[in-house]
Length: 215
Image (cartoon, rainbow, N blue to C red; front, side):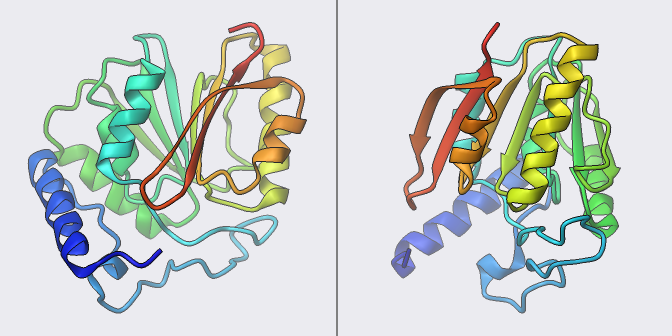
């Protein structure tokens, strides 16, 4: 989607104001027309299925919209799969939850996220960053999972299978937020998650909400 220059400048100012308020730095340099970073979506051997996606992060407005719809509670453990520089985790951690955990493939991005978590303003919940492929990560304690289209169908299928298996050993209520839900039909076909909410962003990306049937 082509954004008019005036709207692009407003968007950049909005992002900069939020970053200043939170005292973090998460903006992707490509948004500012600088040379793209090394993480721009090249498949890597670090990913079991080589289907990792380009770095990206939702706008602050939509993160807050998601939080309002989720209404996370004090006993929730929130996972961001493909957490990048930690923007979603930082905003989520301003709510009182048990923990916010980021799973990120690249150690360089993990280091940035850890720095942001350490210096951010208004954090009310702990943030933990783990450098790992989502298919190898331990996810069995999570109750809310956020995905910004971080990987392809193969990794998504295995992550969903792991989550389903974890419910047998640790029965709990689970919600999943799939932002830019490219593989939405795959999530809905898994059988144990039920679609219950959605909205569309200004630039046309679908954001879908799922939960376990017992929720």
